[in-house]
Every structure is written in C-alpha cells, then in structure tokens.
View 1 (cartoon, rainbow, N blue to C red):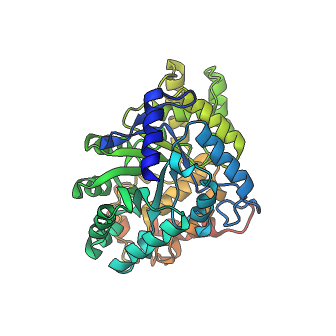
View 2 (cartoon, rainbow, N blue to C red):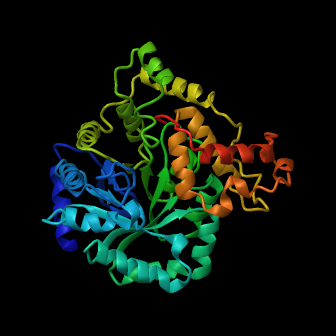
Amino acid sequence: MFHLFRIRMEDRIREGDADLRYRPFGKTGLSVSALGFGCMRLPTTDGLPGSPNIDEAAATAMLRRAIDGGLNYIDTAYTYHGEMSEPFLSRALSRGYRERVMLATKNPVWMVKERADFRRFLEEQLRRLATDRLDVYMFHGLNRRRWEEVLRLGLLEEAERAVREGLVRHLGFSFHDRLASFRRIVDDYDGWTVALIQYNYMDVENQAGTEGLRHAARKGLAVAVMEPLLGGCLASPPPEIRGLFEDLGVRRAPADLALQWLWGQPEVSVVLSGMSDLRQVEENLASADRAGRDPLSPAEEELIRRVRETLEARREVPCTNCGYCLPCPSGVNIPGLFDLVNYAAMYDGLRSSRLRYRRFFPGDERADRCCGCGECETRCPQSISISEWMPRVHDMLTGEEDPGSG
C-alpha cells in the first residue's frame, strides 16, 4: 500500500497539479499540499460540533472532493469526534483514496499512564484506520508537563521502535504552550519530522508564534498549522472588523486573506482546515490553488495590521501569557483561563470559550480551584488582581444564559 502511495505521490509531484500547489515537507524530500484536511470539525447529524454522530455521507463527499482536488494530507486524532473520527476515515478513505494521501493521527498522551500504553493506542489506531502504516504519528497536545511525562515514561523509545518496525514513517507532535516549552521540545529530540502549531495572523506572538515557526523550520521540521482561521473567527469576524475591510476597499474574502497570509510564509508546510461543509471545501481549494501566487497587496497588509490593533484593544484582561504566575499552588491554569476570557471579548466568542472550558480544562485547572492565596499576584508583571478575577471567570465560563452567536 505504502509503495503505491509513493508512486502516485511522485507522479503528482513531477507532473504538477491543476488544482493545488505543493510545498516541501520539511527535510523528508516529500511534497505536501498547501491545504490539509483537519478531521475535528466534520459535519454531524445532530448539528453539535465535535459530536460522535458524524454525517458520513456528507463528510465522505467532502473528503473525497478535497483529495480529488489535489489535497494529500489528512489529520485526525484518537479523541476527535468522541473517538469516531478515525473509524470514519477508514471507510471514507476506501476505494483507493488511502493510497493518495499522507495520513496523520495522534497518540493521546494524557491517557498514557505507563510505557506499554503507547503501543496499545498505536495498534488500536492502526485497526481503527484500517491501515498497516501511519505516515505521521504525533504526540498530541504537548506542553511542558506532558513532555516531561513522555521523557519519564520512555515513550520516545517506543515511538522509535514503531518506526523501525514500519508501523510509523514520521514522528511529530502537536503543541499548546509557551514558546520556551516549544523550543525545548524541538531541541530535546532529533527524531522529529513535523510540528503542528496553532498559528494565524493574530497568533504571531502566542504559543509557538512566528519565532517558534522559524525555529522549527531552521531545524528541518515540517511545520503544519492548525487554527488558521481561529475556529472560524477570522472567516466571520465581528462587524467592527468587517467595517475595516470596507474602509480600506479590500474585496478579498476574510478567510482567503488569512490563508494567503499563511501561505506567504515559506516556513509553513501545510495549513490544516477543519472544514464542515462542501462549500468550505470548494472555497479553500480555490484559495489553495493560488497559494504563494497571490501575494497580499499593501492595502491588505495594512488591513491585517489594523485588524490586529482593533482586536487587541478588545482584550478584557491585560495578560501577556508570560507564565510568571505559574505554578499555581492549587493547579489553576491562569494564563489559559485568561486566554478564554480574552477570546470571548475579542471575537464575540463566549459560546466557543465555554465549550473549550468544558472540554479541554481538567477540573484541577479550572478557575473555581483558586483559593485566593494571592501568591500569583506577587509575580504578575501586569499587576492583575488574579484572585479577584477567578470567581468571575468561572461564572462567565459556566453561565447558563444564552451567549448568542459567539
């Protein structure tokens, strides 16, 4: 199967592609489509984002249309769609579609309690995906604490064994933490092929940011980008931002603006879009066909500068995510919580922030764990009254009132 994939891939690279541009995949010598398909926001029959009830007919049509349009990189994870994303892909990629793509999935590091668990999850994922080999296998959601667990449990040795046995071709990691942690993870291990980071024109100094992107690329890693549209916020911006488009006479669609900004950076290998309907697939394929060949105009560059300035002014909390407040004696994820508050304020995204609070913040990191000791406040360079904020943050993120369309 994999040999056939290489032949078909190499034919596409030699012949070019009428629909999609390709970019170097780090130091591998492979080429990857500028647009990748992220399988975390597939359409569902109940209309709930991330639900396990995937609308298989609609999602399969979307995925195959994207591949027929030249897309060759598919990204999923063990936990996506209530653990149903991987089994869905095994069916959607039948009839020859598996051989036409690079398939990436992720090991749920937070669920690994002992070294043997790594292999157990990998073998289960191979069965779920009905494949004998993963093109990319990632450690999911690494941060400083999880990286230390990876090292303590010897999981890199398990990953290398999987590569030697031919079950995995390339190793990588996805990341959510601060720049210093990203640099450490990149520098600590020479076996990485790809890093998956959150990146867009609003996140140039957030998490890995532009500096992390360039650092990984200098080390020869392929850099895949998630959240290129910030969960849709940059595709459907608040009215105040849409007014800036009109003021500067920019006719380009907001989503295309954000995607072309990313593709204008040579360090970006592939941009993952979590597409939810066929219209988005068609629009993104059309954008990708212009990747690297449709540079932003001076007016569009100025628009991005003014969008950043306008959205930053809407921040509710002056947190810079420096992390000096950590570790919290009670385990509260202070910068992460303030990020949710600011996301809600900047993008009219209260509903999304509440969803992220429920799904991604363990109980021991939530705002209601704050004991009001004030230790964090003695270290905060911004002099934020953190202990006063925490009860308000918890109430806001667990509120029952309708948060509107955010």
